[in-house]
Image (cartoon, rainbow, N blue to C red):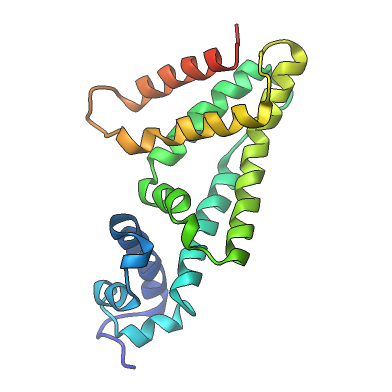
Length: 195
């Protein structure tokens, strides 16, 4: 299959991922064909297979890279007080995700479209991230700073709450991202019984 004039592999590969991410977020993975991705990129449909073996691999790669970026960026200082660690986690989570709405949508809404093997690999990465928050909550409970009955349930509830910001927050809206982060920090502290 011939490439569209002017396409180059070092540009086209990242463009395929960028377009696929946008189209999956807009229309859903199941509704987007490889032909639609190719048309948007500006290459023949067969040329996509130079960059990915199939659509499933493309979806998995998008999710995996999002989660690897998330894990690489999150920071936690185990020596800091649990309340400071929790505040830092809340701020990080909201800001990281607000900057990547399409990647977040795909990472949470398209899990059902992964093969069993790919699902297990993505879930392992998600658990690694969740474990970081749970360690903060456990430290808070052990020190008496937090009152949480079940740290696993609290972890999942907090992450769902924080990720939910992406469903409604818009730049230029009634509240700034700083204001949203501050208010969510306060709600999370109350949820874990922090002083």
